[in-house]
Length: 158
Image (cartoon, rainbow, N blue to C red):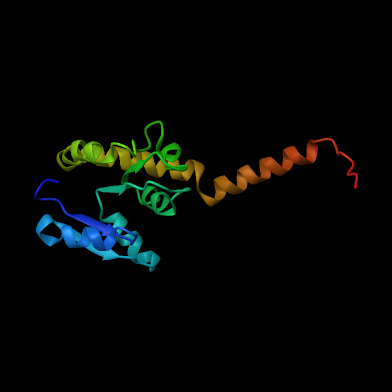
């Protein structure tokens, strides 16, 4: 990372203690630990330029959706549904096998191109509003129920 940038790590995991021993403030890394207060997480996200989710195992990350909702440029590994959420320009999808080298290339780019952060942040916010908002989910559920109600009834045999 460029020396004028800070990496803020929120959350915990099995590698936390190992990484904390190796990387600290002298590397411009701030370890926040797990933050349960939703407003505090949102404040941190709103203050960020980029959100990075380098998971190797994931379903659909709620923290990714929160970051997108805050209009933060997002990068996530292509695991679970995270790659699909960011596909087609809503963010950058990282290869889990090459995440380190990809981040080494991308982080300086984001640090020196704030307009790229802004553009990706706008696209990520629009994606989450279009596809993952409560309204979008209720609309899809209503469509599903409407389709199901039009299907022919099949008698159940026991």
